[in-house]
Image 1 (tube, rainbow, N blue to C red):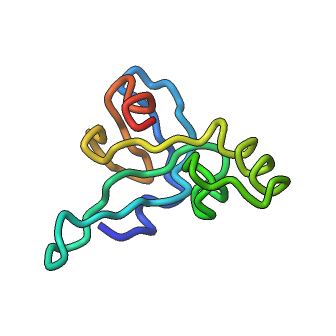
Image 2: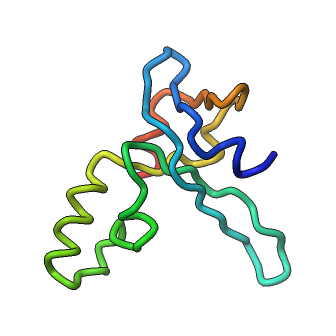
Length: 103
């Protein structure tokens, strides 16, 4: 699978409820020598605030930028990769409640 298979894909739960589009992919690795793996996909209207680090409460400034970024991030959320059931034809199907599991 390539990142381009995920970016821009529509995310829905098993009931067909639309969660948004995948705007970013969060990678992690369990150890220094371990390979990188997908940890989560960021779903919602925009992932800009996540990319700038403003989804973390520890990032507080500059004040105006932080306020704007938090306003943007309010509807974006990470979906843990282990909650993704399938990826087919630019559509991710996730378990119900997966958007709350990643908060």
